[in-house]
Structure formats: C-alpha cells, structure tokens
Length: 56
Figure 1: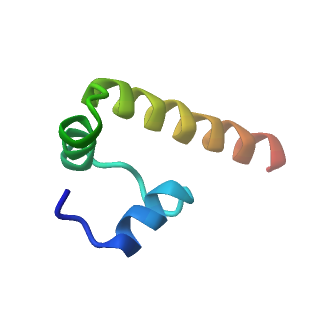
Figure 2 (figure 1 turned 90 degrees about the vertical axis):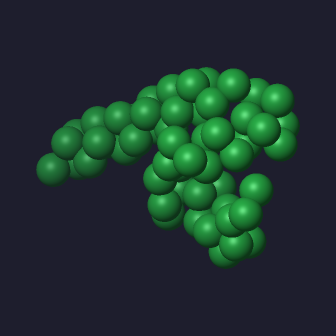
C-alpha cells in the first residue's frame, strides 16, 4: 500500500484517522470499496465525539 507499518498500526489503533488515500489503498489491496472504509472511519470518529461530549 505504500504506507509505513507504523502508520497502519496507528490507524488500526484509532490514533490516526483513515485518509481517503489510505482507503483507496485498502480498496486496491483487499477489494473492499474505499467508501465503506471512509464510512466506518466517520462512524468511529462520530462515536468518539459523542462519548467526549457525554463525559464533559
């Protein structure tokens, strides 16, 4: 995919967001459409924001 292992690890662990470019790389490598990766990323980030609001 052309991404360093550290970057992939940070995405998997939720430390860095999944970029559209990385989603396209995953689509190419795994055959799972990029828009699905982006949709999952958006849902995850939204859940984090909701949890943060509840704890504030």
